[in-house]
Image (tube, rainbow, N blue to C red; front, side, top):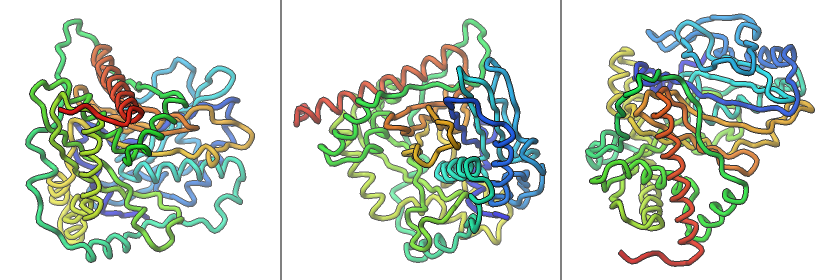
Length: 416
């Protein structure tokens, strides 16, 4: 069983957000429920933790269910989804199947204690392969969860002097707390915006023209959109998760459904009226500085060093000091490969990945690209008005992306 120390990163702040990864798949045709259950059972042979509950006291996994039918629910098209799971009592994954037009919609909720976004994508590909090929899909397949590579990496990169408390910035970004004049009920909502293929392509071309990454643009435009709610704000400090699998030299293509994510803590000075292309360049330079020094290791260093000797409560205090829950958060799941997401003859027409449900005014944007379209989604527990604020933030983010693209086309930026 996977007793990964990094699981503990996602066991704090349950009262603020519950650690889930959510994915909604839309299919062109009805999904075969029996075939889905068989596929789930096959994946659990490779990742047995899926059918376990999480034991907080010793960071272990204990059996909870025995069959995929216990984690699949079929509901009508108008059913309310997204009741908060309990990973300490139930299995680490659940599937909700419902009709959607002529096809089906499958909502998968997985424990972030068990795995991260990249691991979840690997699970999606494994599930679709099991659905398509049956038992042949798992022949010789092993889920690799050891962290020897991380221990070696930490030895190669001793702790360097910190530039202040980077995980607790002096000027954290925040959205306003709204007054609920109508006594509207806060409820779980999944929303956001999806860019057209043309706009997504234009964004990628603009990043190439300016020598930055798409992630630089997403991180900056999101930060600026939130900063707009604070007239005196001139700092952008946003944690940026990073997949450490890219640092693994041995068996880089191995199946690794586990928590292998750490985070960078970029922070830049960015006045409200600064041209977005200038802010993006600053973020690019800052992110490159952090990448060059492998600064992400600082977020997990103490946890890895003290895991064998300290009790869970102490380890959670270490996490709070180095990986604490921010009110404003960003995650980029990257590209979801539609060529690997094939369920037999059934076509996946849409795929939206999002993170945990946050109580407003906490907010996280979740970025992902599927079939050439960039999605900017969010999960919120909030009133109708609070959800609308979330949509406004994402819309403003897109407007700033367009401004960045325009400045790229012009080949120049405004002189301040």
